[in-house]
Amino acid sequence: MRVDVLTREYPPEVYGGAGVHVAELVRALRREIDVAVRCFGAPRSEPGTFAYATPAGLAGANAAIATLGTDLEIAADVSGADLVHSHTWYANFAGFTAKRLHGVPHVVTAHSLEPLRPWKAEQLGGGYRISSWAERTAFEDADAVIAVSDGMRRDILRAYPAIDPARVQVVYNGIDLADWVPVDDPATVRSLGVDPERPSVVFVGRITRQKGLPYLLRAARRLPAEVQLVLCAGAPDTPEIMAEVTALVDELRAEREGVVWIDRHLPRAELTALLTAATTFVCPSVYEPLGIVNLEAMACGAAVVGTATGGIPEVVEDGVTGVLVPIEQADDGTGTPLDPERFVADLAEALTRVVSDPARAAEMGAAGRRRAEELFAWDAIAARTLEVYRGVLAR
Image (tube, rainbow, N blue to C red; front, side):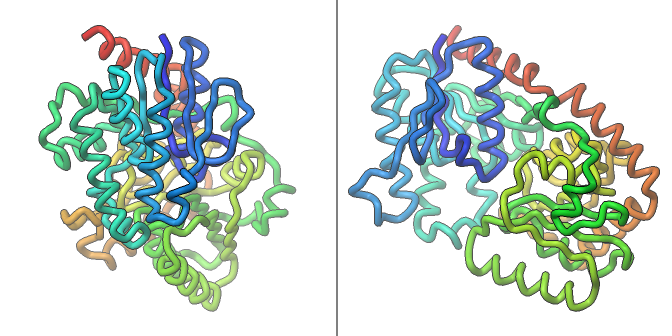
């Protein structure tokens, strides 16, 4: 069996959870089957991996149009595959086109949904209508749709009711438990501007509306004075969200010490040391299909405080591996809390409760590591993905 995996992100050009998912899934699948990767960006040296730049004639076009141009070039090269598997709307149109051009089945994995990310219009302008069309078209036509959580499966069927529910199957995101391990390295933690002897709350994520960073920054004003807030946050979606976050960080720093903002991508050695030293990891997202960052934190032995939304409750076991923060959300696709002040207060209370009891936080972190080992190892996830492939090919 040869499967062509179609993706925008692939190492070393990875900026989000979907890219991490694809890289780890491909590595696990290649132990069993022939996998060709077709990705966006600069040429890759990895065997079996082919990269595609934006077509020269579309260099100045809207980003969504440029994406479709790259998709067409990818689709043209898929000949010979038994099945194509696309990830995110960026590559969905390539899979849709390849299915028709070469007569091969198309599987999509849903890492997020455009109807539930309306703020993307701020980034893409009219291109958001293009991305939404590409995703809907590919999903409704796909031979199988993989959801990364039960919560995501519900979202898919609600957003795209034309899809046969039997075609939507759940295969969780995973974590490489050999790479993501607790690393006791206080010197590295200090080099990042963090005191490993003081309690800390660590956030890792892109600066985008869905990650809920402004709510965290408001909640942090209520944390005990000795607690450090560590933000590993970069890659803003728009200048507007960057300006909002910058202003909130400046206000927080004017009120308290221990606000550390790391705006570069941390290599794994540094990030694992930081997560290991954390009293708690925080995921304040208002939209999160699953959240690989939560798995990374759990694998490093950190307790997780996360919003009770999307797939997060399937990862974080409330009261065992961390704490879930309740949220009531608007049903307009934005995920906006109906009562933002209540959400901020509840987030602050949960964080304070965890960081104020380091021994209990350590117990939760150890339980999180065990949960990651039991449910989210990549070999098991690759095996489940192969089941989906074989089921599609058997039809």
